[in-house]
Length: 202
Image (cartoon, rainbow, N blue to C red; front, side):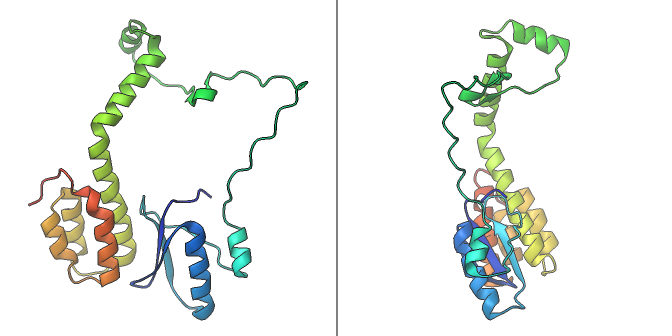
């Protein structure tokens, strides 16, 4: 299980924990010890996806099951054979994978300085820079929607709020969620905040 950077947990409409995976797990274990019937939902603040935690056992057992930092690779012995070469340049983080292009694309790439691999990396990096703001907006809206759907799918104005969110209409969205439970509303607004930048707000 990959450890998300930041989590937020709800018990019903109330936010009960926020922080790192270990901090939230400890808080939730203490909560379910006091209230075994608590209905808990845990969200990754970056993606809005739900996270499952096994809260059975003691606090120490709960924390022990969580991901740890990867152990350092053992030092290679001097007489050990060198590792087999693989496609790409893994020491630089370059990984070889198959892609499919039309013949005219390959012909164009072959004329570029540095060859096809260098040209493709430059094109991807350029696209990443050019689409960064748009990608951040999309990711923020998708994260907010996932949490909305889980916590407020039956709330009044949910459908209207969803349309306003993906249309980038911040004032309409704020009006739709105004009567939702305070903790739910504030968390969704926080997740959606990056989704408004540069969008048309009508």
